[in-house]
Image (tube, rainbow, N blue to C red; front, side):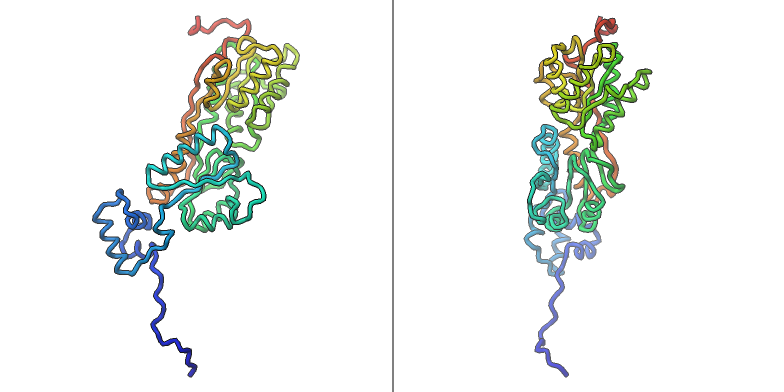
Length: 358
C-alpha cells in the first residue's frame, strides 16, 4: 500500500454565500445584504443568517466584505449627455448602498485585463461588481454571453445598433419627442423642414429621424433627400448639414431645421449666422436634449427635453433590482420627453400667426 504521508483531515470546503442562502431558505442577495449589515433586511433575518453562517464556518473574503459595485462604461465621457446620465447612476447607487465605478472605451493601447468590456476585464470586475451599465455603445453577443456566464447584470442606455433579447435597455421616447417637435414647426406654418441627423448607428438617432418623418407624412409633406443630412451628434455635423440645406435653391430651401441634439442645433444656428440667415425670422431651429446649452444659446434654443439624469437612475436601479431579486425580467424602458419652446422658433416667413400667438 502506498503511503502518501497525508494522515490529517481532508481540507474543509469553502463556505459560500450560495450555500448559506440554501441553508437559510432565502436568496443570495438577501444573504449578501444581511452579512453586510444592510438595514433593508430585518434585524431578525440578519441575526438568523449570521447564526447559520457561523454554524457553517463561513469566512468572508475581502471582496465579500467590500461594498458591492456597478461598472459604468461609455465611449464618450466628454459630453453633457454622459455627465447627466452618470450623475443619475451615481446618485441611485449611493442611495442604495452601492458604489459606481467607470470605464472609458476610448483609451487606446490598454492591456486586455484593463480594457473595459473585454473578457479579461469582465472576469476581473465580476469579483466585486454585480452588474455593468453601458451607455451609447454597441452591445454585442459576446458581451451579453460574457455577462451571463459571470452572473453580471447588463443594462444598456441608448445603445448603438440592435440589442439582443434579454438585455434591459433604457432610453427616452425619442420617436414621440421628434414627432412633437416637428408637428410644432408644422403648426407654425413651416412646410419645408430639414432634419440634421445624429450618429448613423445610434438607436436614438434613428428613432428621432423616424419621428420627424412620421410627422411629415401625417401632414402630407414630402421629405426630399436633400433635406436630410448629418452623421453624428457634433457641432461640426450640424454646421455642415445646415450649410448644405441653406445653399439649396430658394424654392427648395428649408424654413426650419429639426436637429437630433442640442449640439447639432448650435452648429446649425452658427451656419445660419455665417450665411446671414436670421434665426428664427428666416429659419427656425429645434434641438434635442434640452441640456444647459439650450438656454445659453443665442437665441435660446427650443428643444426636446429628455430626462438624462433619470435615465442614469433607472439604469442603476434596474441592475440593483435584478441583483436583489425584485425583478428578473429584462425589458426596454422609455422615459417621457417634453418639448420646451424658447426663442429659436417662430412662424414660417409669410405664414399667418397661429391663433394662440395672435
